[in-house]
Image (spheres, rainbow, N blue to C red):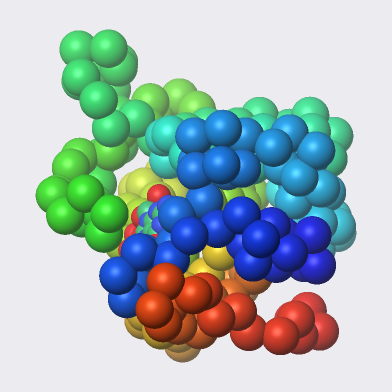
Length: 196
Ligand code: 5GP
């Protein structure tokens, strides 16, 4: 997606060899116009798939999950919670997720009443790196016997294995921008390809 690729080029920061910092428009301050366009782009790709609900994980997936849900006709957004379990119902699906950025494992939880059997669910997140977050969300969908329509991410890091592994499993993965490498602080983006 051209606008997102430009934003990463102009406003993103490469850290070390494997972290893309997009705090200025996606992860801390949110460029609402860009987030809206991202939602429209994801929605356009999945508009004929009967998506009934968007599933993401707190916190940074929520903004684009919301704009995608709006573009799909205000369907609900469910975000898996990472924080204090006392704040969530006891009747939950859980999964363990190892965080690439925080390098810690945490339990994510979703109230069982929000994802129901047969529900057609699209996973949306900001980044796809090793695929741990999406694996955790897919585990929750399996527990709920819901149907995974696909997974859409703003940025896929093509030098990590998540995207390859998920596609090999038959998951339909849409990424709006792919980072191929980070060299000397410079983010190397893959030229835009026609959509699958
Ligand atoms: P995965 O679970 O695919 O290994 O990593 C994806 C999750 O980790 C995303 O939810 C995202 O929040 C975070 N993440 C992974 N890599 C990056 C990165 O390079 N930059 C940022 N900002 N977040 C990342």
